[in-house]
Image (cartoon, rainbow, N blue to C red):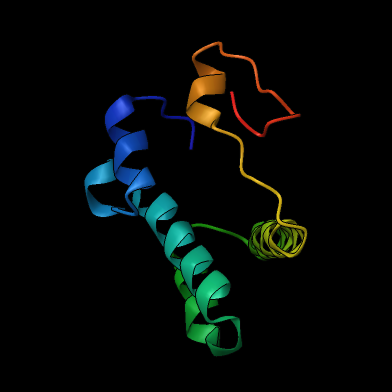
Amino acid sequence: MQDTSKGTAAALEQGEIDPAGLTEAESALLGFAKILTETPAQTTDSDVEKLRQAGYNDQQIAEAVYVISLFAFFNRVADAFGLQSPDYKAILEGKEFDSQSDSV
């Protein structure tokens, strides 16, 4: 997804996929990411087939699984060490991230 509109970003920040203006393929991928993140043991062949029907090939689906899984891993490691998430909005607005105070 390369859309940089504020409406799309705001909708996605709220977890609202429908009003985000995504393509059918992007929506399918985000839906799959949600399932794989929240209930990975419940992922089914049908979930993967929906991605194929949305136009993704097996290599792309495998890459999506790797990326989604890596982010889940990174988040768990960060949580285990009590790391704070940087304020990405502030960083994008040109404010510097202060690694000492975990704030911008």
